Length: 193
Image (cartoon, rainbow, N blue to C red; front, side, top):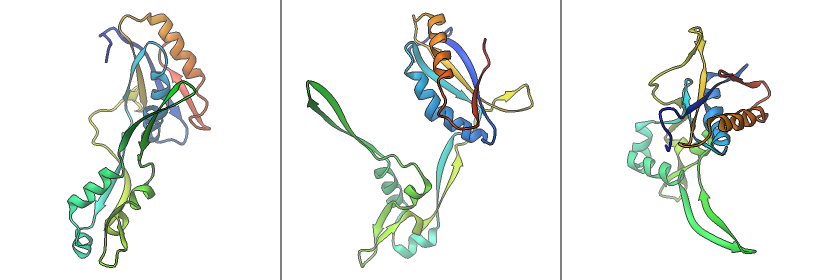
């Protein structure tokens, strides 16, 4: 990112009763970080702690054999059904609107219902017919703790090189205070004054 070693300007934790570290990491990665990246002067928001959520497709090899499908066909179906596609723009009232198709899966059921192939009668064969889909996490390469007692999830805001740090931090704090949509029991706790 377009920042310097001195660009790390604000650090905060994400806390919420009843949420796992994976839940908090997901909230930070997909909701809070996106909002903060829209703040003028913010170039990046890094995440530490928690587990990064991932969907795991566990294939049953005998099912592949029974349906006469390959593992490559499963990979291909998963990739095709989870792709973003740009398709140009349209003009209306002297404004340009970008058109794109987003096919991102958002649930276990979305993945289970992806068609991998068809049997001889033309009946679709779904991922759920070939194995199971479960929520898991990426391989961990680190963790963050609070006072050495329990795991926490930390966000680190990086400032655009050349921006005014005081102004960026004030805008970040204002944005964090405005976050009320992340859950009924969640709160953003600031680690920096």
